[in-house]
Image (cartoon, rainbow, N blue to C red; front, side, top):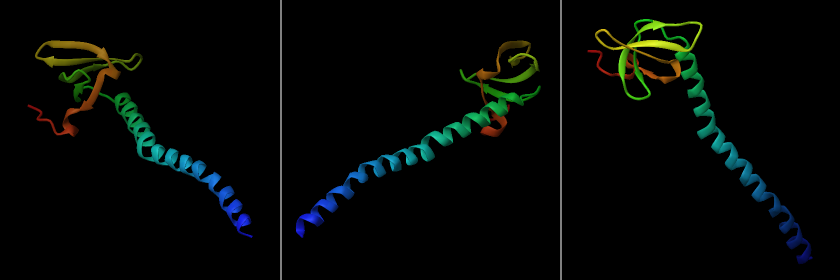
Length: 105
């Protein structure tokens, strides 16, 4: 009789690693992968809606104001100083200065 219970308990334990693996994947998805995908989607939408006059920070840390946006290609012109304009890809724009809490002066 004791052998029957030992065998049944051993068989049930074979699903434990599978359940553990599925649980770990679910935790990784909801705490790491999904938020990163959501943030990337929001960034793509924000970059697509850039307009003239937006104060931005580039990926390299340059602060400036958008002076020209081209709708047909992914290029913007950013004014980084008086009469100093830099042409760059929209993907090089990192964040909005006004919403990030940077001083606008």
